[in-house]
Image 1 (tube, rainbow, N blue to C red):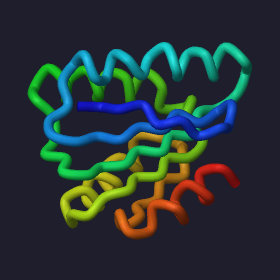
Image 2 (spheres, rainbow, N blue to C red; image 1 turned 90 degrees about the horizontal axis):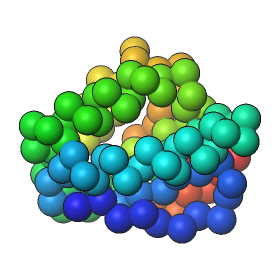
Image 3 (cartoon, rainbow, N blue to C red; image 1 turned 120 degrees about the horizontal axis):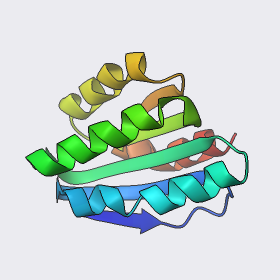
Image 4 (cartoon, one colour; image 1 turned 180 degrees about the vertical axis):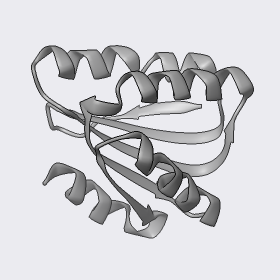
Length: 118
């Protein structure tokens, strides 16, 4: 499941992932990204993972398509989680985008929220 979190900044998409992400979860982010791009801004994405177990296959495919289509549209991505494999995902993403990507432990999520705003 993917929940949209409200961060009061006009170019930030903030989400909280739990369980397994599906294609429908990823699709609800598209309008948020395009609303930011339509204003001529780059996207900053705060992606919090709590009890997150990954993606189902259609969800993974949709996420990969979205990430590659918008690779140059991201400015910063804060990945927040509590598992080592989530940090590995952060490292894996770096070659596919020009965005500054940083992993934060779940206990440091307030620091991550401040970092994504700067």
